[in-house]
Length: 68
Image (cartoon, rainbow, N blue to C red; front, side, top):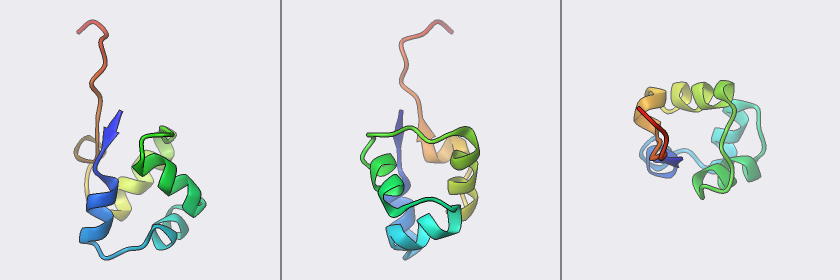
């Protein structure tokens, strides 16, 4: 799953630490999500989207090989 969290966070002039505090997670968690090393829970995905003034669909894209 790809995301634009880093770009959106920088546009909002937020540090990883500031975004982490808004979402109730660690800075390391934000870093791992931004670097596609960790996929957030659904709740965290919605928190990230809300704090970045985006929808989950805008923030994340899924390029899976599953059936449609």
